[in-house]
Length: 336
Image (cartoon, rainbow, N blue to C red; front, side, top):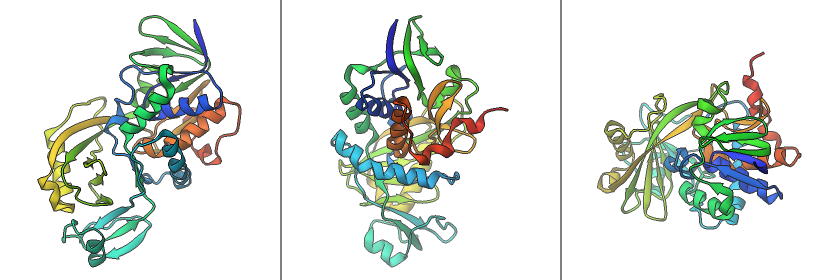
């Protein structure tokens, strides 16, 4: 039986980043991905690097991870990282509940002329950034090389070995579970993770804005590559990964309301990802029944990849993880 210092189950951005940082600490690591690396929630992600839920302690964790992103992007190369900032638009009956600089409508339009005059103002979040998750995955896979094994479907796991669908076993000093929404399906049934469906759109054409534009219902992420990403639905639909025409139209309508020029862009892709949700929408980073868990990142997997990788690599090496991850131990959901 092959043996490694760490066996990482799941080849999305979280699993790949954890393996990469662990290998930088001198550990022998393998990543087992049941399909194609990055083909799950990571592929559908828009790559917005700004906090989302209001889970206690989340802001500190998000800020720590956001601060790590410039270094991680520099190490990986061209992954589309840009500190572009966000504008959260306000309408008469929709006021963003975000901490940032309030701007009146004239100032919003001066910064982003493509914004609809229907808005009454907005909140500027100057520190928000974005990255292209697909480029991040490609860069991480390039760094890890043969350590990433695609179509390696793990059907069972324990504290020091995993079993694949073909009956083979792979051993490790530690097993890291980073299987996203599938973490609790077959691998660790008591882990409180559920799938939350999210549909996003990719458009081509002249960029409608220079910043990320947010409303209560959608966000629009322009990229220098000429791609504009619109997201995202939040659907409790189990493991349904089908694209919905209704969701596509809903997203386009919300984006066009904010930025009328969206109506003239070409729709080139609609994709669905299953986010790993938890009861409090906070991530799971730490020990669970002898397994090291890196999951439950819900809508913030891309944002939290650097700090999660730092924490997991430290734990694998017997070092202390960042203090900001402490509130997010999976043990908070353990049954007495």
